Length: 364
Image (tube, rainbow, N blue to C red; front, side):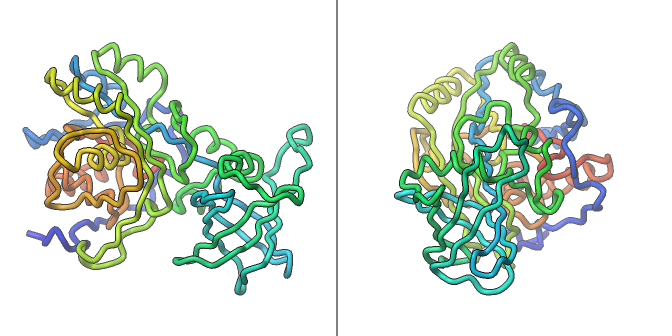
């Protein structure tokens, strides 16, 4: 038996043609592999079959984060060289943290002239955006100031509006090298996205349409929402050999008092908590670290790995994850390592589509 603390235990071979490079024709047309932890059996269904697995008093918990237009393109004012950046988060007084990529060495005090995305003439407002590089941070990050038409942005909330005008939707690097098309602007976003702040979509939620949400409610389930802003760390595989040495990335999340009370009430009536996506799992388990689910708001660096005791999640709808990723470790911890690796092998044989735009797995 593999040592479950060794990252090699979470590796598998995926044929390149199993990676979903484009979204399905319809959001609710994805396939769904059902993994039954009690019987050990696998079923092959479609996402439209989800309501049949729900019972009265069950609760579906969604992450209502909204993907922001975090990818920026421009040129270095000093050299004219091409530049590309990824907004990560706002800090106080309109200062932001970004990842930056260009030829040559950047220096504090440099300016980046941002190129707005291609728009029709009637959509352009004539504004100009520049970034002032204030200081280099760790891991290739930079602290920058946003300057629009010569005026520095001083309100962090304004930054999202600037990104809407000058940025593009970021994609995972395995889809078109991370460069979004016009279709991605709408499809790489859940239909219930409300709270801006993510650089990646909570992809299990991409399968839902208003009609499917309604059918889940008709089956007797309650719909509840948490917020976790997905960070760039979700794209990164675990680089060390042993999970004990992994430095888990932090993400901001919130579970309101009202939502916590509703979820607890459903469970007290015999209902189950179905987390939609690993981000919902991470939020719920962070909010129940004491053993009791209660309101929570703040950064979480929770690493769900072998030995974790689940306090708030009974079932999970998720997509198929990258080898050697913290998300595959999470799913394996919930459903059992051997069972999940067998499920992945079968999904590959059955032609399932993998990763962000791919098919779904329901663990019950």
